[in-house]
Image (tube, rainbow over all chains, first blue to last red; front, side, top):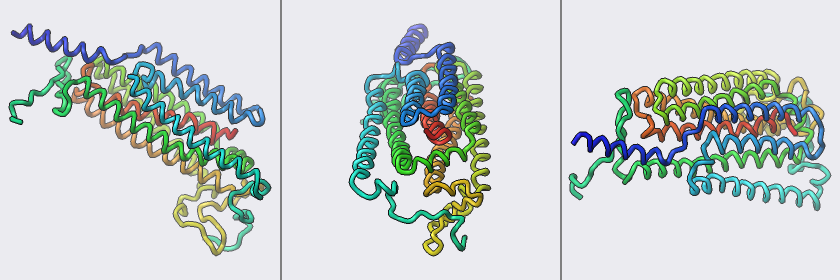
Amino acid sequence: MSDAHDTHAHGHGELDMGHHHVGSTAMFVSVLMALLFLTFITVAVAQFDFGAANMLIAMGIAAMKASLVIAFFMHVKWDTAINKIVFLSSFLFLSLLFIFTLADLFTRRLDNEMHITKSPVDKQWVHPSTLQGGH
Amino acid sequence: MSHDDHHAVMIPAPGPEFVDHEVPHHFNTPVQEFQAGKLGFWLFLATEILLFGGLFAAYFYFHEVYPETFVLGGKQLDWKMGALNTSVLLLSSWTMVMGVRSAQTSQKRKTLIYLGATVLGAVIFMCIKYMEYSAKNEHGLIEFAHLFDGYNEATGQLPWFTDHDGVMADVPHGHMFFAIYLTMTAIHGIHVIIGAALIVWVMFGTAKGRFHAGYFLPVDLVGLYWHLVDLIWIFLFPLLYLVP
């Protein structure tokens, strides 16, 4: 009887384990090294001025680092399709937020005086140290 | 439904130093419990991405409006501190994933060591953050004592931004960079503190032997939270310290 129970319990455990991926230590160490190397690259490229491409380069490297964290450290590479869709869809909605916000900014600046003042607040700028009174 | 209808599903402990896991009665199988927990947590993490996404949208908006202000503001931060904190968080993300791996393979002692190292990383991160905030406070770029005083209509001053050394004197609206810097790093910092507290919580469970190859869901989920904290910082570091 006890044998039968043990077999059942063992079988149960294997069923559970079948759904989990256990990554190897060597793989996680490699990912860490890649992340630290990309951090070094982040700092290194910031020493040069690529003009308008600065932001794209910085965000490109950050996106590479983020992909490593998501795929390996967060185990998304081995996760179920539904979990991948749920999490990765947040970036889709994020892109909608960015696209509409920046589309507003860029189009707004084309046809009003903010293009000149470069300020969404139409107020004269005064540095605080030149102001009287305080707190 | 009679009481006899309920038969608890048990996941047996892999050894004497562990305890059995009883699958809560609202789940039919351990797999269902695991998948439901994971799906719920991924949904929560999606909302976290959108929470920080709003802040990133604000950053990109004002970076476009006041590029000089952001570049000069970024120069007031110590990129070496930022790079150090980035490395600390990346290392702690590695110790966290190793902690989850140790729980998955029923290695109790290793799990505790890795999780403890992750908490240490969180403490080091917050100590460095405190030093950085103190420097900003001294220079009048973020005066924490006056943070909630509000805009002074009479003097036209923001009480928390005096910039008494005049480092931001040549650019318009210098406070914009520091307002965004503080909001983003403070909300991130709160996540670091919550994450560390959650790790301590699963350490107690680990010590009691609750987590092993058959059941490690809480360690897994807290790990995901911690990696999200790292994920956000990966973008904050270049945007705030090395303003492109």
